[in-house]
Length: 374
Ligand SMILES: Cc1cc2nc3c(=O)[nH]c(=O)nc-3n(C[C@H](O)[C@H](O)[C@H](O)COP(=O)(O)O)c2cc1C
View (cartoon, rainbow, N blue to C red):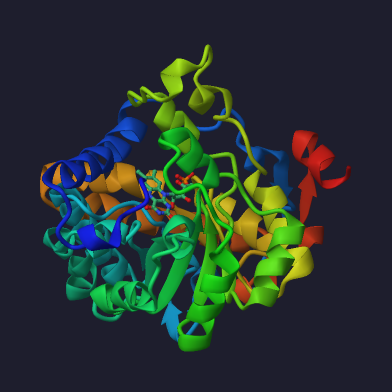
């Protein structure tokens, strides 16, 4: 992402727009065609405690939660994946339709493309068109919010574009650095965020994209006025690993590719959930390496409210795109719900609220234990 010149806004140079679109499609294809997952998934180090006689029937388990001002059927979020390309439009339509049908939370990818090039707006707008009741999370980067030319109306535009219920500001500094050293000055972030906060009542969450939050920053962001966190810790998709598969001439000037060297960098998702929950009582979406409903249960036991999935839904939506359906995505959501419900039954917990923060219902082993007990 290169810092934009305001004069160029909405009429991007043809080759700049082409570059953004090329990057969007590469970001979608690389995780599907290469292994760009972190080598270690720390959820494996958590064991949930089994309880052999449940006090209630399986069907009576309540997975529903309140997500800000809307109720959802289960604590599941389709994480920010895409927007800004005709293929993104197809994927966003599939994901949003499935979210509406299954009554879960939907996120769009970075809306910067839509702000800078109006021809790309529909790839975001489609989500609200097909999912009128779904809580939709908008997305803008720390790079845009920290830009000296940042204007509040850009933020308004993101909300308006999809009638967002919640906005996420993604913090992707490692990604920016290994991508093309685009937006890498964040000194204005706090001041610009304060301007947004003064102007807007909409819930705003701070979102990492695969490197996690430490407790000091979480506390600072809580005090600054953020309404929640999307953990985005290590254990799942690594954006540095994605960049290591792209042709980056800037990185070729070094004897080792920084994107490859830093692909394992970051704080594991379960560790980051605990770090954040220890300093903040606000909403936590656990993202980064969640692959089953058991991982949602593990996240909730550690103190999270919702489980977020990018890679799994990218896979299902890609299949759906080929089959012109929403079948695979709906099936994935139902599978996650069934797995989560099974966990609750096997742990004798009748509702998600009961499970939240019950750290005595799990045992932490291995490397994760060392992280948490240092
Ligand atoms: C193809 C792809 C594109 C993504 N684009 C964005 C984005 O635009 N904004 C954002 O905040 N996160 C983005 N992410 C990060 C995800 O929302 C999520 O935090 C991360 O992939 C970890 O989750 P996972 O292990 O389930 O993939 C993207 C992830 C993928 C796989």
